[in-house]
Image (tube, rainbow, N blue to C red; front, side, top):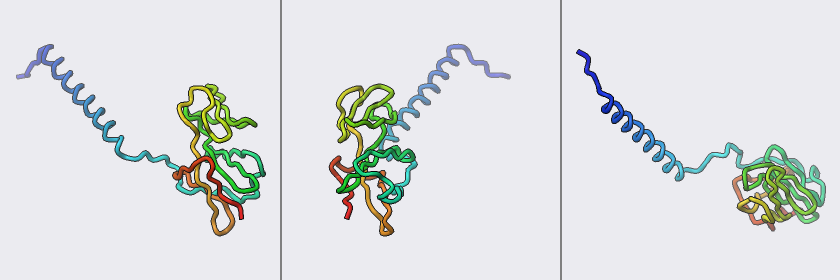
Length: 150
């Protein structure tokens, strides 16, 4: 014989299953906080030779979403990703501008205005023995850090 279930028991069991699933999702998201997120980016990325970058300009490196700035002393790299919602910034003479929501950053990456919650990240630049530049996307530095040209 079939075991018939009444409506009230069905709703009670369904509510228990949904509560169990919701608890599992909440627990998984809580535990995810303790593990680093994988960005999918390489630790060190080759940027080419120093002469590929003009002096006293910010050059956009599209693959890495960074701006490289080269002056007569060295090279620096700043993130081109807005800290608000991740739009790609445009550079100008005064700094960086988010074309999506209007956040403005100084040339040192400090937030000047807009909805952006924080300053831009700066990344470590280095040189390899064969004379090529590389960027370490997992190593943050201060805005005044430069890879010095010798």
